[in-house]
Image 1 (cartoon, rainbow, N blue to C red):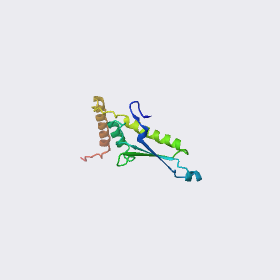
Image 2: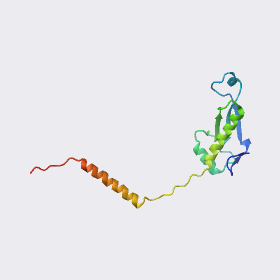
Image 3: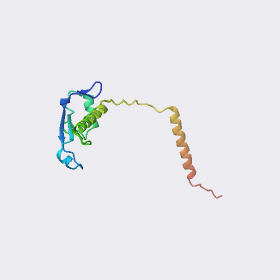
Image 4: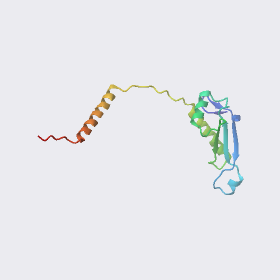
Amino acid sequence: MIRITPTISIHENELHLDFIRASGPGGQNVNKVSSAVQLRFDVKGSPSLPEDVRRRLIIQNGRKISENGIIIITARSFRTQRKNREDAIERLKTLIQKASIRPRKRVKTNPSRASKTRRLDSKKHRSKTKQMRKSVKRSFD
């Protein structure tokens, strides 16, 4: 069991790990050893995730999730499979923890009397400044 939050845990058999060869420099080691990890997690089909967390996870990570509802995380930062595996699982945990936080509802407020007065005073001041810039009409008697 992988504990994400006190209420959410994911069973390890819900994760599908593929070990692939990492790209980039590294000499012979990179050509022989499959040290990069590709973690797949079925978001839509997971019985461990509550519905609201599932919805937020899909919304927050739209580009990382395939059309089938599978999130794909590739970890290739480290030289060993074990560290890349831990990194991929940790990144999945972070994504689910972010999605488990309920956004606060916005409370609609009205502007205070003082803020309205300040706004109107600044508008009057600006208007007066612009009035002073106008050309003066001269009357020739």
